[in-house]
Length: 178
Image (cartoon, rainbow, N blue to C red; front, top):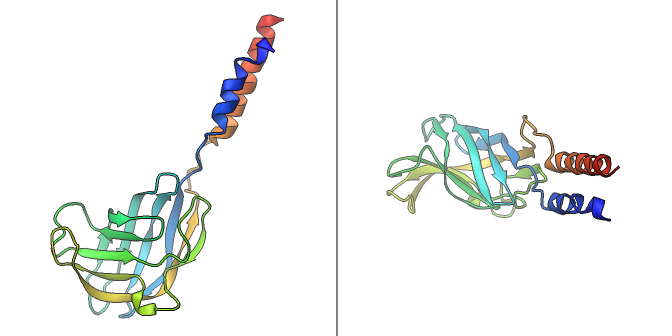
């Protein structure tokens, strides 16, 4: 029993391992003026945080090309993106307003269009004040979704690493006490 005393805390620690955040990639996003949006962001459902934001909208009729790299506000059910932090007056604004389901660390495919009220779907616009609490709605998203998958670089799963460490510790204890 004493031999396993060093292994038990490691096995208990393994149960607290967190899931890998998911990269969400925009797919087939189209605005009502013919413009599009492409790119991706990472969302960690365990901490409800966005990172690695890189979304670009194309020029069509109403708004110029814009690249979004900063989160203004967001949750598991929506995200508001701007080009950079700071005074938002006159800056482009992208609101991904309607996630079919909350973002999770499981990934999957989610639509960005509200099927019951399409006019309340995601949109692209311009911030009218420093905090972007007032927005000029430029164009509404009419098609598209997001696909969530694990990032391309996948670290060795922590649970497997911890399990291997626990087994190595158990082996070392066994050799030492033999």
